[in-house]
Image (spheres, rainbow, N blue to C red):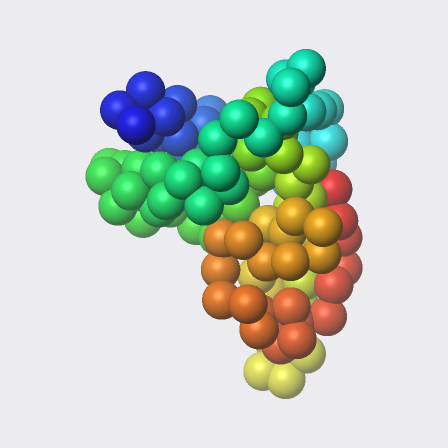
Length: 124
C-alpha cells in the first residue's frame, strides 16, 4: 500500500506540474497517451487504487484540484490494468465544471450521482 500511495502522490505531482506550466491540452494528451499496461489486468481492485489516490490527495502539499486528481487516478488505474476513463463535465446554471473517473460507465472516484449533475463535455 505504501508503494501505491507513493505512486499516487507522484502522479498528482506530475499533473500539478503540467497544469502549472502547460496548457490544458497537455493534460488531456497525457491522459490519452496512458494505456492499460499490464498483460494480466486488474491485479489490484480499483477501490484500493482510488483509496490510495484519496490518501495521496490528503497528504499532498496543497489542495489537489478535481482535474489533477482525476487525471492522476485515470492514469494510475490504467497502469494497474483498468480501462479507466477521465470525464470532464459542466453545469450551466450556475456554471461549474468538474472532472471524475469512470470504469465501464460507473463513477469510481466521486459520488455515483455526479454524472447526472454535469453534462459530459469530454471523455479521455
